[in-house]
Length: 251
Image (cartoon, rainbow, N blue to C red):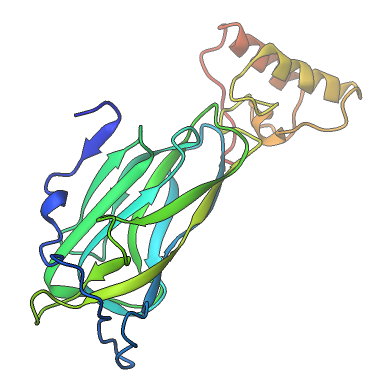
Protein backbone atom coordinates (compact mmCIF):
# COMPACT_ATOMS: atom_id res chain seq x y z
CA UNK A 1 0.00 0.00 0.00
CA UNK A 2 1.47 3.43 -0.91
CA UNK A 3 2.89 5.57 1.85
CA UNK A 4 0.30 7.87 3.40
CA UNK A 5 -2.68 5.63 2.59
CA UNK A 6 -4.94 3.86 5.07
CA UNK A 7 -7.93 1.74 4.19
CA UNK A 8 -11.03 0.25 5.75
CA UNK A 9 -11.45 -3.02 3.88
CA UNK A 10 -14.16 -3.51 1.37
CA UNK A 11 -15.09 -0.01 0.24
CA UNK A 12 -14.65 -0.84 -3.41
CA UNK A 13 -17.59 -3.21 -3.31
CA UNK A 14 -19.82 -1.08 -1.15
CA UNK A 15 -21.96 0.35 -3.95
CA UNK A 16 -23.64 -2.89 -4.93
CA UNK A 17 -26.62 -1.08 -6.45
CA UNK A 18 -24.79 1.48 -8.59
CA UNK A 19 -24.44 -0.39 -11.89
CA UNK A 20 -25.19 1.87 -14.84
CA UNK A 21 -26.14 5.44 -14.00
CA UNK A 22 -29.89 5.91 -14.08
CA UNK A 23 -31.01 9.47 -14.73
CA UNK A 24 -34.00 9.39 -12.44
CA UNK A 25 -34.48 11.11 -9.11
CA UNK A 26 -35.71 9.11 -6.16
CA UNK A 27 -39.15 9.88 -4.80
CA UNK A 28 -39.05 11.82 -1.54
CA UNK A 29 -41.72 12.61 1.01
CA UNK A 30 -42.91 15.70 -0.85
CA UNK A 31 -43.38 14.04 -4.25
CA UNK A 32 -41.30 13.10 -7.28
CA UNK A 33 -38.84 15.70 -8.64
CA UNK A 34 -38.56 16.37 -12.36
CA UNK A 35 -36.46 14.10 -14.55
CA UNK A 36 -32.73 14.74 -13.93
CA UNK A 37 -33.34 17.32 -11.19
CA UNK A 38 -30.99 17.29 -8.16
CA UNK A 39 -32.97 16.57 -5.02
CA UNK A 40 -30.42 17.46 -2.35
CA UNK A 41 -27.11 19.22 -1.79
CA UNK A 42 -24.16 17.50 -0.13
CA UNK A 43 -22.27 20.06 1.94
CA UNK A 44 -18.76 20.00 3.39
CA UNK A 45 -18.59 22.17 6.49
CA UNK A 46 -15.86 24.76 6.98
CA UNK A 47 -13.38 24.86 9.84
CA UNK A 48 -10.51 26.94 11.14
CA UNK A 49 -7.61 26.16 13.43
CA UNK A 50 -4.03 27.23 14.13
CA UNK A 51 -0.97 25.38 12.93
CA UNK A 52 -0.26 22.06 14.67
CA UNK A 53 -3.83 21.83 16.01
CA UNK A 54 -5.49 18.40 16.00
CA UNK A 55 -8.94 16.86 16.28
CA UNK A 56 -10.58 19.50 14.05
CA UNK A 57 -13.91 18.15 12.73
CA UNK A 58 -15.27 18.59 9.21
CA UNK A 59 -18.78 17.24 8.60
CA UNK A 60 -20.39 16.20 5.33
CA UNK A 61 -24.19 16.53 5.44
CA UNK A 62 -27.35 16.56 3.31
CA UNK A 63 -29.65 19.56 3.00
CA UNK A 64 -32.81 17.57 2.19
CA UNK A 65 -34.43 14.36 3.47
CA UNK A 66 -33.35 11.36 1.38
CA UNK A 67 -33.34 7.56 1.62
CA UNK A 68 -30.16 6.13 0.17
CA UNK A 69 -29.19 2.56 -0.60
CA UNK A 70 -25.52 3.36 -1.24
CA UNK A 71 -23.07 6.24 -1.23
CA UNK A 72 -19.68 6.82 -2.82
CA UNK A 73 -18.33 10.24 -1.82
CA UNK A 74 -14.82 11.69 -1.76
CA UNK A 75 -13.78 14.61 0.44
CA UNK A 76 -10.73 16.36 -1.02
CA UNK A 77 -8.30 18.61 0.85
CA UNK A 78 -4.86 20.21 0.52
CA UNK A 79 -2.34 17.81 2.14
CA UNK A 80 0.13 20.65 2.72
CA UNK A 81 -2.48 22.24 5.01
CA UNK A 82 -4.21 19.37 6.85
CA UNK A 83 -3.98 15.62 7.30
CA UNK A 84 -6.97 13.37 8.00
CA UNK A 85 -6.65 11.30 11.17
CA UNK A 86 -10.01 9.52 11.44
CA UNK A 87 -13.35 9.07 9.66
CA UNK A 88 -16.65 7.97 11.20
CA UNK A 89 -20.38 7.79 10.44
CA UNK A 90 -23.32 7.15 12.76
CA UNK A 91 -25.99 7.41 10.05
CA UNK A 92 -24.84 5.19 7.15
CA UNK A 93 -25.00 1.37 7.24
CA UNK A 94 -22.02 -0.56 5.93
CA UNK A 95 -19.87 2.56 6.10
CA UNK A 96 -16.23 2.22 5.02
CA UNK A 97 -13.48 4.75 4.40
CA UNK A 98 -10.10 5.06 2.74
CA UNK A 99 -7.75 7.89 3.73
CA UNK A 100 -4.97 8.91 1.34
CA UNK A 101 -3.19 11.83 2.96
CA UNK A 102 -0.53 11.96 0.25
CA UNK A 103 -3.20 12.61 -2.39
CA UNK A 104 -5.44 14.72 -0.14
CA UNK A 105 -8.47 12.44 -0.34
CA UNK A 106 -10.90 10.77 2.04
CA UNK A 107 -12.98 8.26 0.08
CA UNK A 108 -16.11 6.92 1.75
CA UNK A 109 -18.79 4.41 0.79
CA UNK A 110 -21.84 2.74 2.30
CA UNK A 111 -24.41 0.12 1.32
CA UNK A 112 -27.80 -0.67 2.84
CA UNK A 113 -30.33 -3.06 1.30
CA UNK A 114 -33.25 -1.42 3.09
CA UNK A 115 -31.93 2.13 2.76
CA UNK A 116 -30.72 4.76 5.20
CA UNK A 117 -33.35 7.40 5.89
CA UNK A 118 -31.69 10.77 6.36
CA UNK A 119 -33.33 14.00 7.50
CA UNK A 120 -32.37 17.45 6.28
CA UNK A 121 -29.17 18.47 8.02
CA UNK A 122 -28.12 14.92 8.93
CA UNK A 123 -24.38 14.29 8.90
CA UNK A 124 -23.30 11.54 6.51
CA UNK A 125 -19.81 11.31 7.95
CA UNK A 126 -17.27 13.26 9.98
CA UNK A 127 -13.53 13.59 9.30
CA UNK A 128 -11.07 14.68 11.98
CA UNK A 129 -8.06 16.64 10.76
CA UNK A 130 -4.74 17.76 12.18
CA UNK A 131 -3.13 20.94 10.86
CA UNK A 132 0.37 20.71 9.39
CA UNK A 133 2.84 22.67 11.53
CA UNK A 134 4.21 24.46 8.45
CA UNK A 135 0.81 25.03 6.78
CA UNK A 136 0.40 28.33 4.94
CA UNK A 137 -1.94 30.80 6.61
CA UNK A 138 -5.37 31.43 5.15
CA UNK A 139 -8.13 29.36 3.53
CA UNK A 140 -7.84 26.20 1.43
CA UNK A 141 -10.68 24.28 -0.26
CA UNK A 142 -12.51 21.22 1.04
CA UNK A 143 -14.26 19.62 -1.93
CA UNK A 144 -16.95 16.97 -2.44
CA UNK A 145 -16.44 14.66 -5.43
CA UNK A 146 -18.62 11.81 -6.70
CA UNK A 147 -16.62 8.65 -6.16
CA UNK A 148 -17.32 6.93 -9.47
CA UNK A 149 -16.29 9.94 -11.53
CA UNK A 150 -19.30 9.53 -13.84
CA UNK A 151 -21.72 12.41 -14.44
CA UNK A 152 -24.20 13.22 -13.05
CA UNK A 153 -23.31 13.21 -9.36
CA UNK A 154 -25.65 10.73 -7.71
CA UNK A 155 -26.25 8.49 -4.73
CA UNK A 156 -27.71 4.99 -4.98
CA UNK A 157 -31.43 4.67 -4.42
CA UNK A 158 -33.33 1.77 -2.83
CA UNK A 159 -34.77 -1.13 -4.90
CA UNK A 160 -37.10 -2.02 -6.45
CA UNK A 161 -36.51 -1.64 -9.36
CA UNK A 162 -33.07 -3.10 -10.01
CA UNK A 163 -30.96 -1.15 -10.65
CA UNK A 164 -32.64 1.33 -8.31
CA UNK A 165 -33.24 4.96 -9.30
CA UNK A 166 -30.35 7.31 -8.65
CA UNK A 167 -30.58 10.24 -6.26
CA UNK A 168 -29.04 13.25 -7.98
CA UNK A 169 -27.27 15.88 -5.91
CA UNK A 170 -25.24 19.04 -6.14
CA UNK A 171 -22.32 19.75 -3.81
CA UNK A 172 -21.06 22.72 -1.87
CA UNK A 173 -17.39 22.91 -0.94
CA UNK A 174 -16.12 24.12 2.41
CA UNK A 175 -12.88 25.78 3.42
CA UNK A 176 -10.25 25.04 6.02
CA UNK A 177 -8.65 28.25 7.27
CA UNK A 178 -5.32 28.15 9.05
CA UNK A 179 -5.12 30.96 11.60
CA UNK A 180 -1.99 32.82 12.61
CA UNK A 181 -1.46 31.28 16.03
CA UNK A 182 -0.27 27.71 16.32
CA UNK A 183 -1.42 25.20 18.92
CA UNK A 184 2.16 24.91 20.21
CA UNK A 185 2.49 26.27 23.73
CA UNK A 186 5.21 28.95 23.80
CA UNK A 187 4.91 29.78 20.08
CA UNK A 188 4.28 33.48 20.62
CA UNK A 189 4.90 34.59 17.01
CA UNK A 190 2.86 31.80 15.36
CA UNK A 191 5.65 30.31 13.25
CA UNK A 192 5.01 26.77 14.52
CA UNK A 193 8.08 26.47 16.77
CA UNK A 194 9.26 27.57 20.22
CA UNK A 195 12.34 29.72 19.77
CA UNK A 196 14.33 32.36 21.62
CA UNK A 197 12.54 35.06 19.61
CA UNK A 198 9.31 34.07 21.38
CA UNK A 199 10.89 34.79 24.76
CA UNK A 200 12.27 38.07 23.39
CA UNK A 201 8.80 39.12 22.22
CA UNK A 202 7.43 38.75 25.76
CA UNK A 203 10.36 40.68 27.23
CA UNK A 204 9.80 43.48 24.71
CA UNK A 205 6.11 43.61 25.66
CA UNK A 206 6.93 43.87 29.37
CA UNK A 207 9.30 46.85 28.91
CA UNK A 208 7.02 48.69 26.49
CA UNK A 209 8.96 48.02 23.29
CA UNK A 210 6.14 45.95 21.76
CA UNK A 211 2.46 46.98 21.96
CA UNK A 212 0.95 43.50 21.61
CA UNK A 213 1.75 39.82 21.06
CA UNK A 214 0.49 38.00 17.98
CA UNK A 215 -0.50 34.94 20.02
CA UNK A 216 -0.92 35.96 23.68
CA UNK A 217 -2.61 32.69 24.68
CA UNK A 218 0.55 30.85 23.64
CA UNK A 219 2.69 33.19 25.77
CA UNK A 220 1.20 32.38 29.18
CA UNK A 221 3.18 29.17 29.71
CA UNK A 222 2.92 29.20 33.51
CA UNK A 223 -0.87 29.81 33.35
CA UNK A 224 -0.71 32.87 35.59
CA UNK A 225 -3.30 34.65 33.49
CA UNK A 226 -0.95 37.16 31.82
CA UNK A 227 2.38 37.01 29.98
CA UNK A 228 5.17 37.83 32.43
CA UNK A 229 8.92 37.52 32.90
CA UNK A 230 8.58 33.96 34.15
CA UNK A 231 6.93 33.01 30.84
CA UNK A 232 9.83 34.53 28.92
CA UNK A 233 12.30 32.60 31.08
CA UNK A 234 10.46 29.28 30.65
CA UNK A 235 10.24 29.74 26.88
CA UNK A 236 13.95 30.59 26.69
CA UNK A 237 14.74 27.46 28.68
CA UNK A 238 12.51 25.38 26.41
CA UNK A 239 14.18 26.74 23.27
CA UNK A 240 17.58 25.71 24.68
CA UNK A 241 16.43 22.26 25.72
CA UNK A 242 16.64 23.07 29.42
CA UNK A 243 12.93 22.56 30.05
CA UNK A 244 11.13 19.42 28.82
CA UNK A 245 7.70 20.99 28.21
CA UNK A 246 5.47 24.03 28.60
CA UNK A 247 1.84 24.19 29.73
CA UNK A 248 -0.68 26.66 28.31
CA UNK A 249 -4.40 26.89 28.86
CA UNK A 250 -6.53 25.33 26.08
CA UNK A 251 -7.18 27.60 23.09
